[in-house]
Each structure stands twice: as structure tokens, then as C-alpha cells.
Length: 347
Image 1: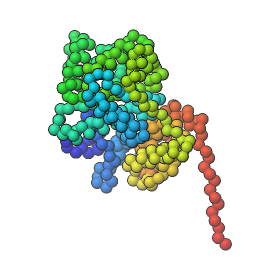
Image 2: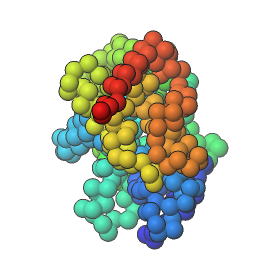
Image 3: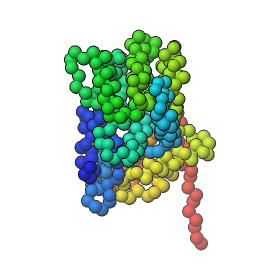
């Protein structure tokens, strides 16, 4: 694969080829966002802003746990003919659920490519989302759309399902990532039927299924006979905001902030500037990694545009965040800066 410059990489992200298509997913796996190299002519303002507009993945504890747990499940499921075990990543919005499962998919696919470099037509990972007010056919079509299968106007759900299962077997699917599962409501007939369709796919495909959604236990995903079956087969990993109470929690947050700071393509930023503001950043973002990423990248873009090339508290203060983060910050104001000691005088 030819090397692409940073602007060319940005052009590869096409609106009509999202992660829920094999082309969009392949580009996501192939891309490794790196800061434009200083001094080689590629570190233009536009190139650096393009880089900051992408969500740089940071290996948080949740991401590490999801990757380790799911890869273990893939191995345990390898010889299972049915009743395969799966994983559900659940939590409030902004805590990195989608980031975790897509990082898992990328890690798994990259590892398989290294082990089987000559299998160019292999598609080991499928990524789909559950549409709002989904029906079984709508879900089946999402799988077909990922593979790019042509569907006749008269294709019924059986036709679509069979085509999906045949294609998945042919290309060697091992991992199926299903996002937005909170759109399933098992208390409704449609939701129950979509859940049954997912279960049918899980029985037909020799793959490990990973679900992600907002507080899935609160929307009834584990209720009733269908929910009980899910609960007996799926491990759950909760995602939460980063806490800041204990020394270990503060250290984990500090490390996360430092990791983000290390990715910033600013020409004059002093290492440790952002990490020194970790308490302020926690108060601004309520410990939400999504809000933190938005805040830091937005402030860095401002520092490029105004020519200062380093982050300041003023840059961070100017970035408005999501409603949840702003509400948290309003009820948890930052302490006033400690007064400076008077300068020493000499006689």
C-alpha cells in the first residue's frame, strides 16, 4: 500500500463509506494518525488541524480490558458449534464504548493480517450499528450493507440472512461488533424480533459477538427469557467516567492527560503543561474521555490558529463542551489559584 501524506489520508475518509461498510472499516484499520513531522514540509497548519480533527485512540484501562477479554473469548469460542460466549460493553455516553470496541476490532484484524499476510480477501471483523426502531430485516440489511451485497427489491429477510451468512463464512469473519444495542427494546415485539435475529446470526456465524450500548441493563436487555439467555452467555464490562478521589485514580487521570498531550502537534508546547492542569481538566469534563478529547483538541486547534503554538488555560477556557460536562463544571467550580508568595527582596 502506498504511503499517503496527511492531507491525502484525510481525503480517504469518505462520507458514503463509514465504518459500517467494509471499505470504511478497512480504511479505519489501515490509518495510523501521526502528527505531521516538523520541518519536513508536511507540518502545515491545515495538516496539523486535519490530524487534530481525528480522534486519536489512547490505550485506557477500559480499552485494554475489552481487548484482552474479547481476544480470550475468540480463542475459547474457536471450537464451539453453538452457545458461544460474547461481550457487552455498557455505560453512560461519552465513556469510550465505541472507541473500545473499534480498538478491539482493529487490534484483532491487524494481528490476523500479520499471521496470514497472503489472505488478502479475508474480512475477519464486521462492524454494524442497530438502527433506531429496527426490524429484523433492517438489521439483516445492515450486515449486507457492510459486505456490499447487492439486494434485489424482492429480497426477503431469509434471502438477506442467507446471503450474509454465506458471505461471512466465505471471507472468514471471526469477530462481529454490534454498536448501539440500546436501540433494542425487548419489551416490544419489534425489539424482541430483532434480538432473535441477532441470536440467529450468532448461531449461524462461527464468530464472537461483541455488543456496545448505553446502559443496556437499564433498557431491559437482560429482561425476560431472551434477556436471561443473553445474561447467561455475555460478559459485561462497564465504562465509567474517570474518578479523581484516590491517589491511584488521580494518577490514572494524570496519565491519560499526559498521553493526550503527547499527541499534540504544537511547535512551542512545553511537555507537562497540560498534565499540570489535570485537576482543572477533570472538573471541566467530569472525567469523561470524550469530553476531554474534544476540549484538548479544540484548544490545540485554537493555539495553531492564533499562532501561539502552545496550550494555555485561556485556550481551554474558551472551548465550550457538551451540556453534561458544562453542567458538571458549573456545580464543581475549580478552586481559586493559590496566591503567589511575594518576591524576595535584597537589601
